[in-house]
Structures are given as C-alpha cells and as structure tokens.
Image (spheres, rainbow, N blue to C red):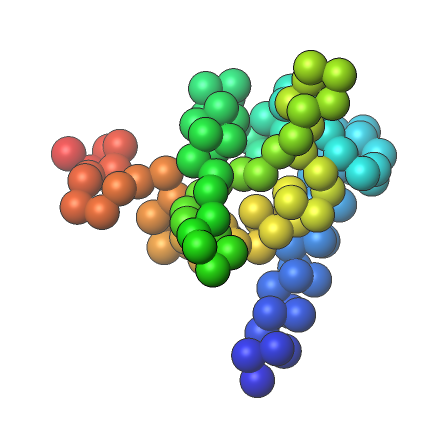
Length: 113
C-alpha cells in the first residue's frame, strides 16, 4: 500500500512540475539555474540559498530536512537537477498543506501573531 501512495505522490509532483514549467515556458531538461528554480518554486533568492544550505544526509543516507534542496556546481553556477525538483515538490507537498513549510516547531507563522 505504501508503494502505491509513493507512486501516486510522484505522479502528482511530476504533473505539478511539468505544468509549472509549461507556464514559465521552460523545457523539461536535466537541470535548472538558481533563477529558474526560484521561478519554478515561487521563492526568492534568499530562500533558494537557505534551502541549499539546509541540505544534508545522516549517516544512513536519510535526508535530514525535507525542506532542503540538493544542488551541484557547473562552471561556477549552482544548478538543481530535474529529479531533485520533482522530489522536493513530492516531499514538501504534505508540509505545505499542513502549513508547516518554512516554519520551525513551536514558532508562529506569519499572520498567526
């Protein structure tokens, strides 16, 4: 049953990503620049760099924070590959629905004060 749920969430994430790329007139390709990633995710540059800095894995290879983004450097430019964008959207879909994205436990969200 878990595999069906994961497969369905991947399919939903890919639909979201492809629709966003189409709306931005960007092709599906192997990787995207930091500006393109900001446009795709609807985030600012400071948030992009925060997501990049937050990326890490534990000793067992598990992601430490779901609201992080893996990237690589190509010719001194930071890039994020398509699969990582897809996985980021998949992992963070539930967090966004629950209003937990970009918050820390116990801290009020913007507008909650």
